[in-house]
Length: 268
Image (cartoon, rainbow, N blue to C red):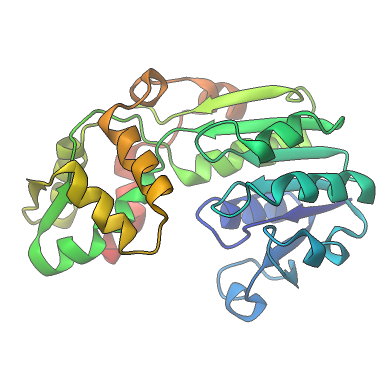
């Protein structure tokens, strides 16, 4: 059995690849830059050049694949249905998909594919904290527009649920809301970081418009920028409510934000 992982070097994808490799699976990793991927993925993983947003380039990567992991990323909305169709035609019989924040064209295509599927619906990733690196390093400041509570989830837990759903029965047709074990405000996350780093970090609120402009400056479309900042302005109930799905699927507690910080503190 060969399992193809798209977005293989991304925040969750690299953990999916590593988790499958630890369980002795034959893993094929789809990546734009196989040379760079070798430094972050386990030895023995088959590396294939390509991107899931260009289905024409994925045909060879799907050869012999029976299970597929998809992470919905910008640009996949127009290509996702075709990617799913080609996967089914190639013989894929089980898929996991990390949604893009809502059930869009790719998520619907997976659900309508006729094969076993599991949709992972993480709320806010703990790895979003990495966007604070530069301002913390240079100024000791975090600038965000809102201070709402968020039950942030560790990206490795998202991946662990994906690995479980890919390899074990009982998860087909399920949509899993995934959160961490605590709902934390921005200020509370900053306090945890401050304690771990041993230095004060200030919270400096910015306006909604400033937050949108900041995303636009990174190349994000206005539509996506407005969606992201709008989510923080009025987060869904699921984002601030702790869900026990991670613990129930994995048989262990979800990782805490303190654990995530301990793993990444040196980067700040």
